[in-house]
Length: 504
Image (cartoon, rainbow, N blue to C red):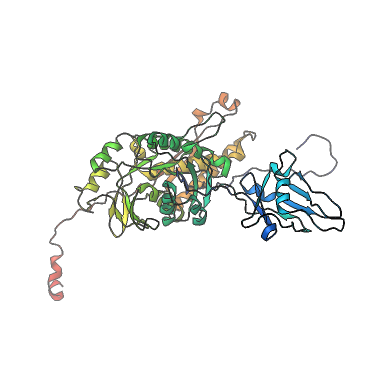
């Protein structure tokens, strides 16, 4: 309480106590690819008059901003033709007779509007005679202000993260060509997900195309390609945690960069092995040691309506959608293995598999940490292993559990930063984290976890420097990857063959 004198009553609000911690959203997909046919920006337009007086006005700059342009047509008696621009308003004084009849033709208005000058309408719009009009008709006098319409921004600007919020209609603006339209179809076959899309330029030259996908930070500070996923949170308010570049992740450089971006975002990426044999896929796996990568082989065959036939599709596209579906319906602790995949007609290579026999192609791939695809009561991913060189993070679920816990705890404690350090504050933080752990344990997301203070990490010098270190340990839920039964022949059930009286 303040020491200032006050003859009366003071109420001091205390804000101590634990805070609820909200689990971060884990089901947001980030995907990078090409879409040459994506919807371009459209210019706003306005058509006035009919027949030979019809005139079409178009915003010079395409985009939704053109919809703010308005046109006013003024009449009067004995006026001369003029046009002026003020902000987004174009004011045209039509030429009129002394009796107030408009004498301005559409052709004359066209010439006046297109006149050069920064303060002229021609700096923001272009006037053209409408189809079928010779411009000889007189411009109609319209009392109200007329608004331009139809202007639309580019749906997916190059190297810009754009959020698709579960809308196939929005995704359709990517067009039909390139890798992104196929990826959207694969994802939406699994779930209507939140997807951060980064469209890059298309190139016929492979090296140029790979450079476009990997991206960089240009001289203006613009993030491009995969790097643009790092800007998603600042631009869109969401952090992509399930990453892929279907159609390009079979290039080792792209796959490696996906792993690097996943490290920065605490995300997980699915990559495809190059088209080839199972042995080649295993060799490709040996090129990586990143715990945030899972390698998939072979691909899926799916029906393509635009091609009116079956086409091959990278498996990673459907892995992205399935991962988001599981996060939403089950949880991030469930691996993608052994779940039916929607919208699949077949596999791009034969994969023999037997539930009880390890000596199959599927068994060979899994033993070498390559997740494969099998046909068993539908088509499924089979395999839960990452590309990690550390056995602690061998399973997809272990990596994602660690990431979700780290971000949930960190982002849930912004409120504590810069508060006066006290025993009460420390206790509140620890109890809040442990309360969250109890919740996650009760719901089956973790086996158990605990947060505690380690005195050795918190000497008086570090506390005087404003530092507090808390420890937490946790046990992720492992998948039941290998189930075994021991069978023993016994005679003890033979008694059941005797009549019930004899048994008595």
